[in-house]
Length: 334
Image (cartoon, rainbow, N blue to C red; front, side):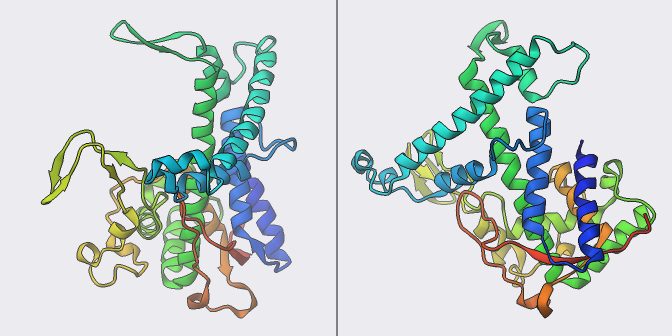
C-alpha cells in the first residue's frame, strides 16, 4: 500500500521534472500521508465526499491555542476567545464523518468474506461491545464513542507528524546541499540508480537516521509536548512543584539548548547524532528516502539555499508557515 501511494507521487514528480515545473512539496507530501493513513484506517484513499486534513489541522490549532480559561477558570463560561464554539463545531463535523464511515463498514461487514483484508475500522468493529479484561477483571467495554476517539487519534497523529517532519527535513536539506549530497550518496550506495528505495533496506541507512533526528531536534513534532498535572508534591533539580500544578515541557528549547548541544545548537548538523537510535516511523524514512533518492532538488526563481523561508506556525505542532516548493530533476535510470 505504501509502495503504491509513493509510486503515484514519484510518477507525478517525474512529469513535473520533465517539464521543469515548480512543485508544491507540502501539498504533495500532505496528500500522500493522508492517502496512506486513510487506506490503512478506512480501507480507501481520500474520499471525495469529505476531506479530513482541514479538520485535523483545526484540532491541532485548538489544542495548541492559549486558553485564558485554563488560568482564570471562571472566564470559561464566557468563551471570550471563541475556542469552545470552534471545538463544538469541529466535534460535530468530525462526528458526522466518522459516523458515516462506521455505518458504511457495518453494512459492508454483512457481506465481506472472512478472508478479505480488514482495515483498522473493521478490526475495531469486530471488538465492539466485547469486554476488555486484564487479569480476568473487566476494565471497560469498547463502544462506538471509544472507536471514534481512537480514529481521531490515528487521523490527527498520522496526518500531521510525518508530513511536518518530512517538510522540515527537506527544507533543511535544500538549505544544506552538502548534507543533501551525502544522503544521496548513501542512498546510491545501497540502492544504486537502477531501482527505488525499498522499505526492507531502510535500516541500512545510518545517515538518513541522523538527518531525521537532527530535523526532529530543531523542529520537534510537539514543541511543548502535552501539558501534565503533577500527581503529588515534589522537588526536581531544586525546584518545588506543588501537587496538581500544570507542567509544560519545552522540547523545542531543549533541542536548541547550547549547554546540551554546544554553541552551534541552531545549526542543522546531522553528524552530531547517533545512528543507532530509532526515533521515527518507517513511513517518514521511506517517503524522505524516496524523494531524495529519485530526484535532485532546486529552489525556484533563483532562490539561494540560505534564502529559503523557514518561518513556522506555533501550535500543538509546528508546521511550516508557507508551503515548501521546489523544482525536481529525476536522477534514476528506471
